Image: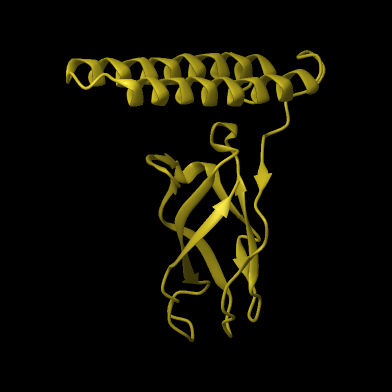
Length: 172
């Protein structure tokens, strides 16, 4: 069994994921047609969905091609960083968490899975006010998202209550 980080496994997973997304687009179009609401708007939606899928797939293919021959070294893990996000300071360390879905603006049915979101740094030290969101799945790049970030006290039962979650808009 090949290593899960090997380029061959990555390429196979990318192809499988592409076909799955293509199938989702086709099924959505079929459901729209079955409801009898097929007009110009569904055509525009399906064309946008297909173009969006093709652009993301091409970007993933370029990244795979730039990684070099599959027999030399594993493909580096994809990640994209947001611009710095500023929040209010706190006198204690806070662990950043995904507290609510990150929904694509204008396409509320499309959400980034929690597993594809990381924070840099993962923990804010006392007094720190800035962090970045790291996206680890190329399928969600190139759009703006509205999501909720939670702040958990680093030490359970420590001084200071957890801060309420903050809703942010972020471009990834």
